[in-house]
Length: 253
Length: 296
Image (cartoon, rainbow over all chains, first blue to last red; front, top):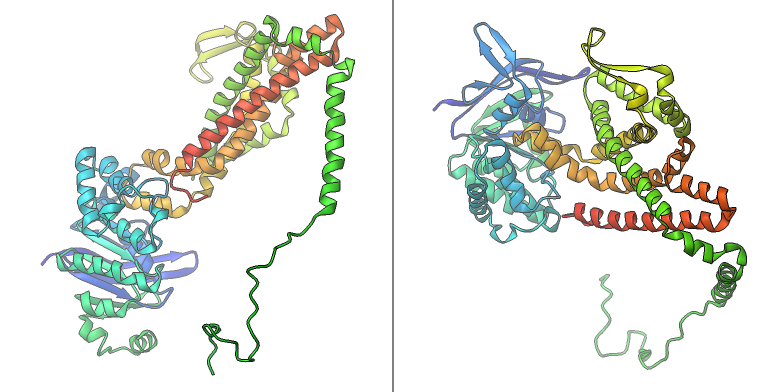
């Protein structure tokens, strides 16, 4: 399998705070990587860097063979224009912790917006695709509703459908269930599991250890801006080698 | 021991006393005697005021009726509406540009916009209007061409900036400073996550603004913008210093001739009230349009 995401010695600071201190990570095509770690360990920043929502200070990230945010020409890297970055992002789906649905647009309009404006997909086709996606996340009857009329779990499922509408090669989830009531977590995780079983490549930042155990091909444990250890769930979750991982797991399990 | 407070069903309470049944009793609402006193006092005052409006001959309602819809007054109302319309349209157009200059990441554009807003909010409207009216004194000719180089077209400022366009220019430039801050406030009120989501979806930049940011910003822009339009509408009366035949100027001209000050001021007042009412109603419907999907 080829590398879908390739991250090499990525560093990032906010002012004097070093958030990422040399991250190396490879995620192969069709693989599900779950990133665990305490708050402030840099998980979300790493995820946002992959989508170029955060610009890294050094190192590089490539997705499906193309560098994120740069274009190589000979021995130089040219920074991409915003338009080109936006185009790159259409190949990567991003699901936020707070859903970030557009509150003034209906569920259907939320999903149709990006394919129509970013990919220039004909509206009719986009609507048909959106209806299929809504059925897939179990919300076929909510097309005309506004986001505020839905529960948190339903909103997050719409957000997933919205990300899928661009038919991305890679899906990034930033704590997709952290803003949900406990009884709504399951319905969102079920949708994500479904996607995983269909072979979608994804990186999921989460605190749901059970989900990681069930779905992840690779579990990545981060702390203090570094990857402490990574490997199959059976290794990292059940037989962690590092003290830091053990301490974290003993608190959350 | 349990902490549940469910009453025992169909039986006397633990103490053994019979449970009282209140359902047959008559409920007497609280009386508010002082509220009634206040109502009576207010009603008397309102009645006195209305009585005065009708019976006091000083109001000269017959003169009011004579002038309310005369051609001169209607024409003046039309000019007032035009001044408001152009002032608002140009003012907000420039205001939007200034707002995005202030929100941009370029320090130069930011400080230019900041300085503009600072300057035009500092200068009283009436002073500014008189400046524009006397533009000819400062610049005799306007040349269009290469900056600092030769010009292609040129105009005499005397012909170019008539009283009316000087007034529109003054109102619009003044309005732009306030509009810029209102628009900027509206854009800042939109949750940052919205732009992030739009960016993550790869939606083109202009489309992000037009489709995602502005419709949401409109909700906080509109109430303030309506205030501005209404205050500009009444502010057009300041233009009377430039001898433009808008409503207030025309009324002054007429009462200068016939001496009927009070009824003619009432003519202007009633027109201002009617048009402000129309604007308020329009505001209601425009706000309703932009509140789609909102819960409040």
